[in-house]
Image 1 (tube, rainbow, N blue to C red):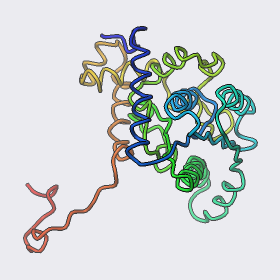
Image 2 (image 1 turned 60 degrees about the horizontal axis):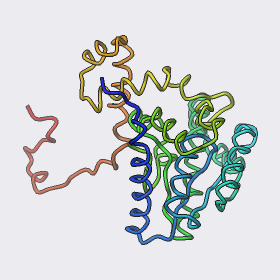
Image 3 (image 1 turned 60 degrees about the vertical axis):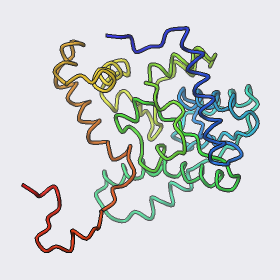
Length: 280
């Protein structure tokens, strides 16, 4: 199987392609610059560095920690990078917003309510992103990678809410590779991936597999267009694990597409008309 990672000679080409895509999207939108929600993790660090090359001074990093949840080290790493790159930034704590939303939610079981509040956090950050973007005529530059997008590992209308995904066609393992090539601090590159929704949360523990395992399976299923069984045989991985990841792709499709529009046509006025899925 072809290696997922890029060859060294390909890295500067990938960097240039992404930088030019950011420039083009801003121009097409007739915008003045871009907003990046910056967590201090490797994905947002890479996007910030690429955006800096594309937009220079027309870029704002929004650092939006949740006091008591966001590790201080993440904030330190974020500040270190924005200062190093001389990027304009704002620090906005989201605790008050989260508390307000928690008080609004009066229905549902405790566990379901807690999880809904967790998901409100990336949506709060999205609202703040667009609050700034709309005011300044900037676009929102998303930080989701290909692995997250395929698995639906993100919050709809939250961290998945953006105008462009510069690293949306890079698997997580490729993100690490490009970040290292671009000279991003090793502490950030090697940091344990986390969405930061609750204390101690990590991506790999929540998903149930390492990113290396996930990417190899996704690459076989999506890029090589292999079946579940073929992927199992190629990678020597259990069918249960491959099927689990395959179903995650299928079930999360709604996160990668705009909402379904119910079509109304003259056919509907025919009393014998049936919705297509009901036809024999």
